[in-house]
Length: 152
Image 1 (cartoon, rainbow, N blue to C red):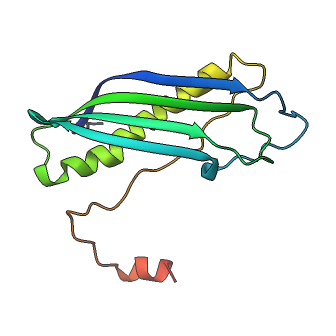
Image 2 (cartoon, rainbow, N blue to C red; image 1 turned 90 degrees about the vertical axis):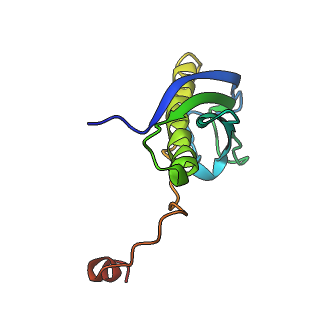
Image 3 (tube, helix red, strand yellow; image 1 turned 30 degrees about the vertical axis):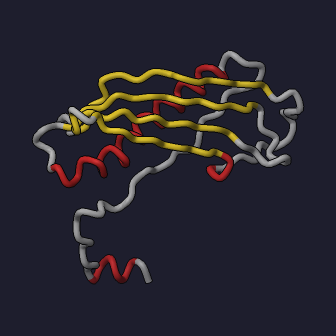
C-alpha cells in the first residue's frame, strides 16, 4: 500500500434531511436503482493554493412513485482535499473529479446507513457508483488484440 497523491484533510455535513416514508410497505419489493439517486458534485480550487480543493457532493434520493422507498433523503458533504506537489499538474483536476468525489460518496453511504439504522425501517446502502472518466490529458491506449476480441 502507498499514499494516494490526493489526501482528504477533513469533511463535514452541510445539509442533511432524512424522512421515513409512511407509505412504505415492508411486504413489497423495494425498487430503487442508481437512476433514483441524483448526485451533484462541485469542485473549486483555492486561488492562492491550486492544489487545495473544496469538493461538495450533494446526493438526493428521487424515487419513482412505485419504488416503495423506505426513506427519502438529501445529503450534502464538503471535503477539503490536497493534491501532492509531486503529482503532474495537468492531471490535478482529473484526480479530484474522479477520486475526491468517490471518497465523499463512500462517506455519504456510511452517514446515510448510520442514520437509517436509527429509523423504523432497515437501512439500505446507496448503490456503489463510479466517478471515473478517462483522463482527457492522457492519450487513449490503443486496444490490444486481447481487448479487441473481448469487446466483440
